[in-house]
Length: 238
Image (cartoon, rainbow, N blue to C red; front, side, top):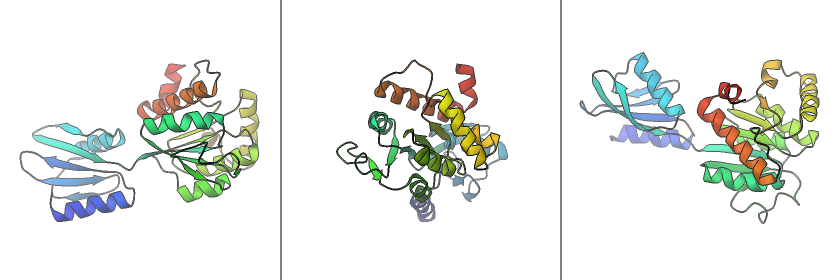
């Protein structure tokens, strides 16, 4: 790897930019592929770049099936993130599960008695109002946001930021009746039906979960399904 390529990769990691290093194993040339631009000396066809972007989205390094070229794609993605609003019992179970699944977890709750290191060891805690905390975190397409407080003042504040971002998953705890009331409040705040349709509520896959740990499992399973298969997979699984 030459110096310019290494510098570009280090800058991408510093700024949290998803990219991949593409090497032509026969010619010895290489290129860094970003979502919106390309650097390096390797010429990629539009179809090849499309395949590379797919590999980046799947976090899947390996050989690329490209005609007349022997290409290896090494993905350099920033960590996946899970932002949990509400330092409640479900969050205590969800946080370590998500860490095991490879997520960087942040729990936001302005209630200091809930958001403590004793209850959430090894997890980033923000004792801030949810909208302020989320705006500081700048949710992106590698971020999932889950609200668990059952308090509209907290959950709605977080949702108002999450729905304006391009985070890949938004989920909110509550019954169907609670969710309909939530949608009504958000409509009055000016959110469109398309934006409201992004919210997974009641949150989690329908597996009959009852305990905090089971509900956390259902939530992480749904996040994983959306990440790996896209929102359309949820309809097929219903």
